[in-house]
Length: 438
Image (cartoon, rainbow, N blue to C red; front, side, top):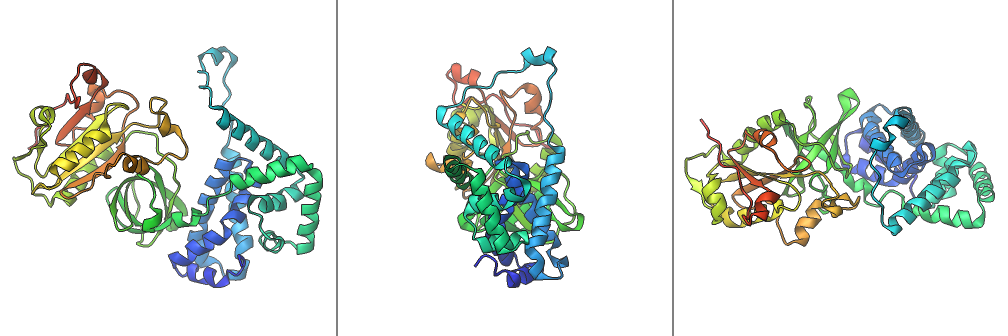
């Protein structure tokens, strides 16, 4: 039963990550329903739940009575929901500037229909009186038992029965069916709890975390690391999955001292901004040294791709960046290089700069798009094979310019992929050569 939780609370409070994952699995829909009843937006509700469980992990050691966990968690969820509501302000555009606002691209009919139905369901729930909205949302999201709803809300079963009956009376049968179907469809995924991993170590801005190998976070998505000492969550960008359940990420800001075993949560959101040049300057020597064992020589690793070997040769034991806009074959060139040099004696560290989601590549805008799955569908590796270690970072939006390419000066070699060069029938469209090194 969901509410048989006290032993899990004790174990999780003692630092047992597996117990916390199970506790999350049992309570995730209750937390989501509570958040949804307040923020009335599916994505915001999921964000609230993620923040709430990060805060819960940090606070569990101070929870004296395990039996109080449901009400304690509910309070955390409400706190984060109200914080979201306070900072959620619609940006108003002056009438004089209205013409400058671009029109939204028309969406496919099935997406529009789904959004209209979701909006209608949320509107119907929001019209319920406050005392009915909470129990109704919990019940409709996941068909939680009346006993479990009562325990989570701190009410009697009789009160929950009465309030659910009243909620059904407020919603006509047709609307009731629509609300139930919609909330079921937008409930947290069953694997939400499996998004929790634990911190292995940090090195500079690099974070290594361990997850269930069957539920790895996607490449190019965000993780949140629990900073218990500061009651905060730190954002990390997934740039490599080297194997064995290990996920390697890049911290979005300077990292404080974090204990091994700290909770790491996969949000599945995709970071938008390009990597900061100063951060890249710190990252390249750190990762290059770790992957090459500092075995650098003046030798060149030949790829057999003439335009690369002639214009931008790859140094043995060195680093290379692939920078291109959508449609120029970033991952194609990566895979070709990997297949040709993975058996080299000398390691090579490769950085692939991927543009942010764009209409130029419509699949990237799909909320269910998986970068790792897209590589697999093409029959490609994730770039870390044999002598080659590959890291995926967020690149610039649109074509690379001389200025943005200069921000990659920390790497030994830049392979620049350009649409203009493709039109000139030069492929790979490489225009940048090797940087001189001391």
